[in-house]
Every structure is written in C-alpha cells, then in structure tokens.
Image 1: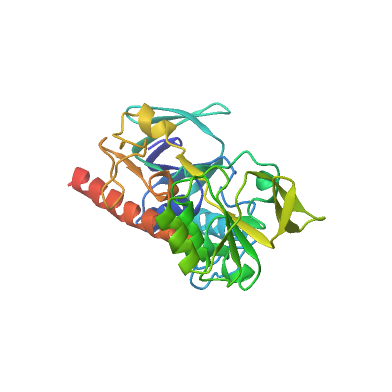
Image 2: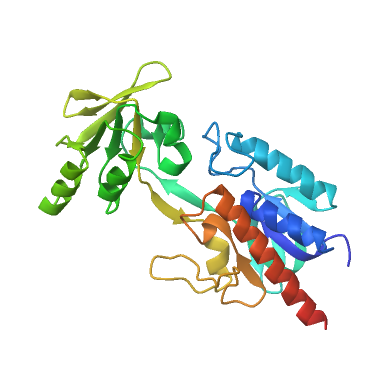
Length: 295
C-alpha cells in the first residue's frame, strides 16, 4: 500500500469511530480516521453512565481516544469528507484523497431543537435531553419538560423518576385525556399555553415563560428531532428506512458491500458507551470480512 491507501477509512472521530479504529489497529490493520472536530456532545460539561469514565468531559474522552489511536499507528486526519466514490475513494475538504478497502461511517446525528428563545443557548447545560445522562445532576430540583413531539409525554413520565417536582408544558401538543390521566397519576403538573422563551439569570436557567408568565424551573428537558448525518451513506446507495436512517445489521453492515456504519449515524438512542460498543463490534466484523477476502 502507498501512503494514502488503507484497509479501512473511518469517518467520524467520536466514541464509535475511535473505538472502531482502535480495535482495527490492534488487529494490525492500516487505518485512517477522518474527523471534522464538531462532536455532538461538545456543549455538555460532563458525560455520565460510561463505566470508569463517569463525569469525564466529553472532549477529554475524545482526546484520550485519539492518543490511543495515534499510539497504535493510526493516521488522524482533521478534515471533512466531501464525497466518497465507489471503490472507495474518500475525497477530503482541504484537498487530497484516501483509498480504502472498507469504509466505516460514524458520522453521528444532529439535534434539531424547537425554535424557542433560550433553548439553543442553554442546550447541554440546563436545557437537557437525556435523563440517564443528566438527570442525576438535577435530581430533586424543580424540573420542566417541554412538549410538542410525539414522545414528550413519555419523557415527562420518565423525568419524574429524578424529581418529585416536574411540570409538563404541552406547548403546541394537544393532550388526550388518557395522557392527562397518566401525568396526573405520576404527580406531574400541566401548564397550558405556548412557551415563549426559556428564562435565565446570568448563566443559570430560572424558569419557563408561558404567555407572559414565568414558571420557576431549575432545568428543562426537551426531546429534539434527531436527524442522521447520513449524506455519505445515501450517496453510496445504502438502503434507508422510512425515516431516512440507514439500515444496518447488528454488526453495522449496510446494504452496500464494504460500507459499515455505527453509533448515532444509525442509532439515535446510542449513548456514548453504546456508540463505543457499536464501533468495536463493527470493527471486529470488518476485520473478519477482510480476512475472508484474503483467504
């Protein structure tokens, strides 16, 4: 192989991509990892639920992973991938290209947030999504759950596990009577009206404004719309489901031979530790596939 030819090119340097690169390098594969440097969880000060790494800042985990990948001889390319041609020829945003026998896409997803003033500004700090990631840190405080999406009532019922003081803001959601009954059974209050903004004092969320009145809250949970960063997958012809997510088998194999995907690019519910595991599983399957081709 020449300097730009690899057994595997990994696109995306989060937990899934780094984990996959590490496993492949330890299998003595030639690997390049391309990352644009914009992790989804960058706004969060800490990550939780990752055994032995609970409370670590997300960027520290990435830095540690990059050091491990580099230590095994992996090539780290700080760039974006603008196109992948069948074969696979990976074209980089700053010019140049990488050739790969197999391709692993760990490009993640993006969170589409409600267009309510204050939501984006406080996102990842005290406007939150995942109670398993951040619920313990706001336990027993006055919490709010913003409605609007189809799963927001379920989210409110879940959040009640972390605090006895939870208020649900339907916002644009029309609640059915059975939903009201379920909320009431869990002791969750309902504040009718359209949410106009998230209120903060300095660098601390203090409430939710509804039709001009402010309901005091210490943190607010919001379920965003998850949108996969799947442009490369679709450009390669990978099959997608009815919601636009690439279809993969349990090891991350797509419908296109030689193309694999792992992490939030194909699983919107994958926490950091789950994404890392998915990257590891994909890497082992990729290596086995390469061995079969060489035998």
